[in-house]
Amino acid sequence: MTLLAFSRHILFCLGLAAVSALVVRAAIDARVMDRPNDRSAHTLPTPKGGGIGVVTAFMLGIAMLYGFAEFSRLADPYFRGVILAALVIAVVSFLDDLWDWPFTIKLVAQFGAAIVAVASGLYVSELRVPLWGVVELGVAGPVLTVMWIVYATNAMNFIDGLNGLAAGVTLVACLFLAVIAEYQSGWFVYFTAMLLAAGVAGFLPFNFPRARIFLGDVGSQFCGFMLAMLGVAAARFEHVEMSSLLVPMLLSGVLFDVSFTLIRRAINGDRLTQGHRSHLYQIAHRSGMDASLVALIHWGFAALGGLMSMLFVVSPSALKPALPLLLLLPQMIWMAYVVMRARAAEIGRW
Image (cartoon, rainbow, N blue to C red; front, side, top):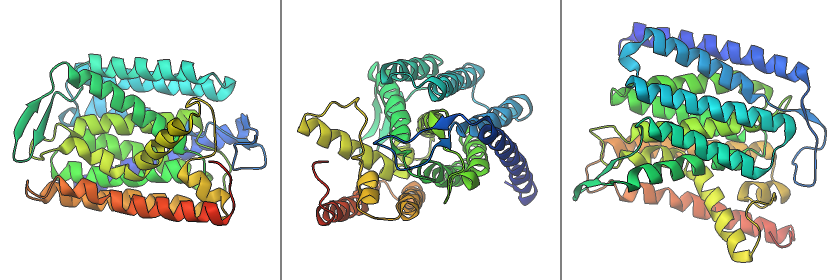
């Protein structure tokens, strides 16, 4: 890519970030309030639904991408399927911000959106495994893709409990993914990651370090869904074995926290659909750690995942399986540290 082309892309994304910021500012004035409860990290009523700015900027950008940047598009059925599915997630989650629907309705919408995307043909059909070759997934491919999309969408929703955490992770992950995609000439992933990053960049100053508005389900679910779809698209990078692991590596901090929490709650016999304050990042905050520091630590996890992903792309086949496993080490250290703080703060059963 030439420097001139890259400069144009940056200017375009800055314009989308400005659009996002204007919509977020309007959402603050609309005053759809998130009132604190016993699970909240905030103590004062705060506007929510700021993710509508992210969605607006992204959809504007993707419309222009569809109309004027044909070389960066997926085949039309894939493209339309992804955008329709993203709209379903955005609309349902926005209505949920307004009316606080039960989790089951949100879950049905997530499965519906994932099925729409997969039905368009965009799913992981094979894995290129080092020292093994191509593994055809057959009918398991669409099923596993749907499960991945729903899981990643919920993971970003669950992690959105402190100022700037989910939005910052999304921004860092998208920037690294755009760099990797440009290197692989994966132009749909490159542009889509840049568009999502632009929307989040316009929102983040209103949410971190002090929150004038929250991302809301419309933002966190949309970001999770689009990152999941980018993971599916990145899995088709032809020259990178196990490329389906790139986005999970970028989201290693989020996925570890959510997976650890779900497993621990299942072992404890807790109802998994019931709201709680027992994610590792929440326990860290409850133990006295500054909320901004917790968010920055998760940004760091995303950046570490990004650096490891870049190394992953250029590593020989024999080293590739070990690199994702290395990302478990900082997560284990973080988990041990949070548990130690919880015990010192005498936080009860969590």
